[in-house]
Image 1 (tube, protein in one colour):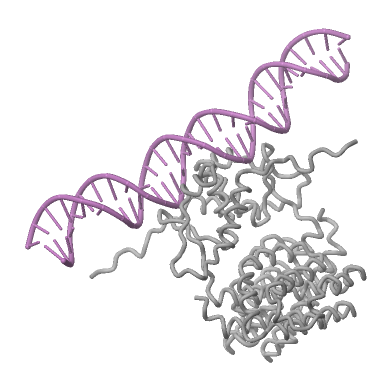
Image 2 (cartoon, rainbow over the protein chains, first blue to last red; image 1 turned 90 degrees about the vertical axis):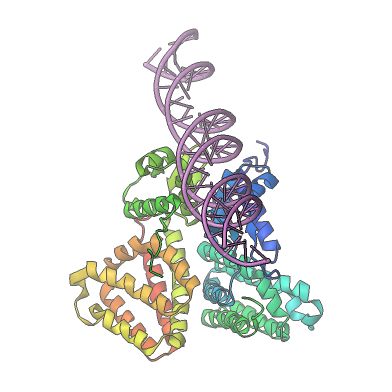
Length: 225
Length: 225
DNA sequence: GACTGGTATTTGGTATGCCAACTTTCTCGA
DNA sequence: TCGAGAAAGTTGGCATACCAAATACCAGTC
């Protein structure tokens, strides 16, 4: 037996349209512009080279995920989350990630936990303010790694969607008030709690780390709205 | 100036189809039957009296919510969750509800917290095993009440979807091994923690209550799969 | 010039038709 | 009798056409 094409299974046009639109929306940085962005179904179909049907079905999914809003005979608008909505998403995220940390303490293997320390050398080399961009990426990856160690698909899927909405905010908040140094200390503490398989502590540290971000956005996130 | 009608705002056919399909799916108790249930787009359109387009868009939403699965040129199937998927949903639920309890301790008014004790007299009258049906309803309402007291829309929306999937399981688990009596004790403890505005305790009690259900389904939920 | 009323255009919502792929059924020969 | 293969029927995916509502535009009046 030899390996055939790994994929074949040419995705549906709907899936392709979904990916294209999601990428476009998440990359446009809606919070920079003042006016609302309207999407024209017909122009999108034309640009994507498909008919309106798969575009509409893709937009339906994006509406369900909270990215766009349909207004009958008015248009499809890209949703700008308010500050309180962002805070609410971070709180939900904290709840789920802390549960993932708890689950990881009993489910993850020693090797998987060791990966944490190895994969994030940034946390152990001082002066994070020098490489904020790389650190922001590592930050996101770190939290995703904890969630994957929890091995709970439902938590993974829900947080994956939440992350889409708050990714930009996370990075912006990092740059305010020199939060990076403190953030790294908390990350190290979380890793140590996981390695000690102290579920209660890991859960609490992750939750407080997340809620700290929520409070920070609550206080200083006025550039939203 | 005189008052005109507030508004007609007749929902879209898509929304109507969505409601009808969701109701049909949640009421059919998929776990009783052995074979998978297939939905025929054309028959559904015929029965609902609309064309296939709004039905397909409604099905797209239901797919996103995890109720159905599209298979190209094969059909649309109602998804039967496996035991481990149900357990994962209960774990995610526990995480979110415990965060809601934490938030409720600082956000809810005294009046709102007092409502808890008043609205659930079942918890204070002995012998719950005599009225399991009413108690099951009160059980669901109680947990939804806690979530609403948390005043976090994101948590409310996500758990609302999760509840759709686990509603049947919750009631079934209640009847196994005389869990009702113990469940009530835990509910009372949760109410007292909330009234004392003890965020740490309320959060922990809610989490352990939920994770207890998860463990129970894990052990005795073999009728799933 | 500002406002009113009507008309043309735009836009999302819906219905319908076609197509390729998959199933089922039928056919026919060994 | 049985099974391989062809033909017919289904089914979801997509494209297209049409509709009603909302908007934009424009002439006409004061």
